[in-house]
Image (cartoon, rainbow, N blue to C red; front, top):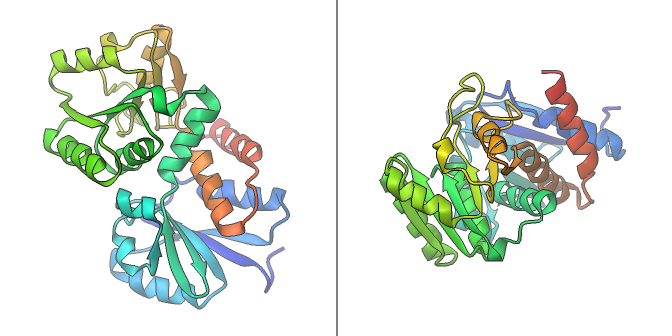
Length: 287
């Protein structure tokens, strides 16, 4: 029951109509008997500072941040977690004693999903990341932080891949190289070297479900193929990987685990990960 003791949380972004986070979090709080309420807060960029001033004086204990404000929010925060500072974006904020403290749970959620569901050893594995945007940044820097043997970053705009690769090497650990994904010879050569292929782009996301971010002929049986997209559950990349006998993984694990990381930051309690996974699966079945 919502009352004067209810602790508030929210999701700041625009647009928010397709987000699963409010339903996932609210059902998780219900299952753990926590008097919390998670609200979608669709705001305009010009109002960010005013919204944060208001939130500080209400019963909010934190909030998530999504597109397009993960970078823009940082200048309004009082403290930023060291890894989030390296990544250069924040998706989770905790409010403690009137201070806004920023974290990035995207990369942590991805790695936890990777390790828990596929049993991959990060430090002995080589990775190919398709894309050099915000999600790739979080994943690349977290993998580097966890000791990845080698990370290749591929992007249609080679300058962005080079920039992210160099930044990861400088800020975290020297383990990254970059490649132009229009260079088919080089891409084929690199896919032979890697253990894990990760699509961090929106290519293949509904409604453009026939699109694939990588030539299917480059997929090998030895690969673990991951797509952080979760609508559809099996993207064209995953379907092609499945045909080749690859192990495959969609974006639901990352979604659940980054949400669980945020849950624990806010509440100080263990997140009900299995229940959160079940909630997301049920949401997807009803879509």
